[in-house]
Image (cartoon, rainbow, N blue to C red):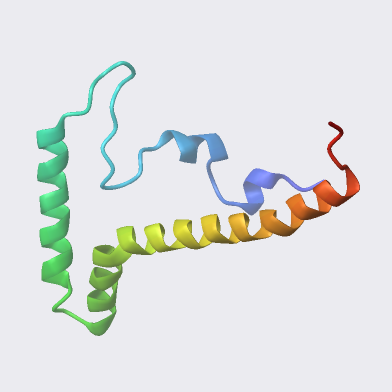
Length: 103
C-alpha cells in the first residue's frame, strides 16, 4: 500500500483548496461586493498585463487572450446553444413519430 501523501508531495488537497487564488479577491459570507475595490484591482491587473505585453511575444499573446476572453466565452456559449437547439429538432421529430398525440 502506497501513501498518497508521499506521492503528491507534502500537503493535502483540502489545504490547497483552502488557500485563496492569487489575484482573486475573497469576501466573507454575507458581505456585499465592493465595486470600487474590484474596479481598482481590475485596473491594476490590466496595467500589469499591458506593461508585461511589451516584454515578449508570449506576454503579448496572453494580453490579447485576456482582452478577448469575454468575447470568446460568449462565442462558445452561442455555439453550444445553437448546437443543442439543432440537436433537439430531430429528437423532437422522432418523439412525435414514436409517441403520437392522442386527442
